[in-house]
Image (spheres, helix red, strand yellow):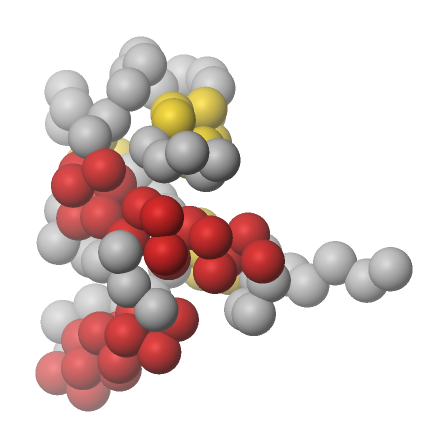
Length: 95
C-alpha cells in the first residue's frame, strides 16, 4: 500500500497496516524518530532510500521540508545523545 504525502512522493507500507492516508506531519515524526507507531499503535519501522538518490532528495524536500544536510544533522544529534538511531537504508542500486 502507498500513502500519498506529496506531489510525486508515496510512502510504502506493509499491506498488513490498515492505514490509507497519513498527514505529512505524522510521516515526518516517524521518520525523525519522534514516533514509532502508526495510528492504532501499530509499529512503524522507517527505511530510508539510498544515500544521495533522487528519490531520497525528493522525499526530504517534498515530505520532510528539509535538505539532506539538515536530516543528517538531526540524526547526528540524536546519535550523539544516544536517544535513537536513524532509519535503515536501502542499498544503492547498481546499473
